[in-house]
Image 1 (tube, rainbow, N blue to C red):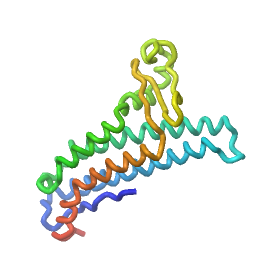
Image 2 (cartoon, helix red, strand yellow; image 1 turned 135 degrees about the horizontal axis):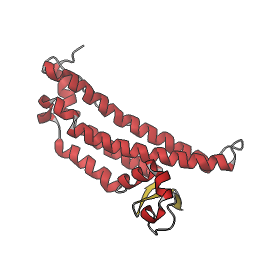
Image 3 (cartoon, rainbow, N blue to C red; image 1 turned 90 degrees about the vertical axis):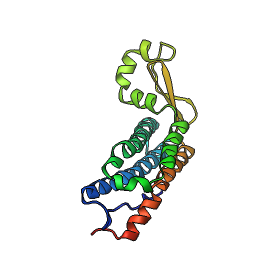
Length: 202
């Protein structure tokens, strides 16, 4: 798993920005957490496909859905973290802006949306599942059955407002998420190096 570049206030960091730099670093490490949580959910999903003999098929089936729900929500959280880092956390430390590769940062966010275009649909379908099932005429693509599940092997799907969101629960999806996070971290490499060379505050 990639590790967040160490961003810590230096002796040259404006006093009023020190807390903001620390917050920014905490949010970058949150991206690590999202990847680790997604990996754990993927392992649960894979285990449920071939469960140990002590686990009933019914429990294993439920595990698959638990894993998929976690994968959907952690992917959504990852996307939200990327957005909040750029739109909220960076505002607290303007002295860092000239040394951050903003084009790489924006490119990473766009890449995530290109890889996973159904994030919003899946998130809403997951957190409003009961409501969706109660009103299939609104949420189901066919107006009949607002069912979540697997219409294709290892591809979780769920409907919301007539759209069917899809997410591949696989190592490839994790690799793509990791690629995005690595690129996003890369936009902070220079500023991390500069802060270290300036001398971190205790």
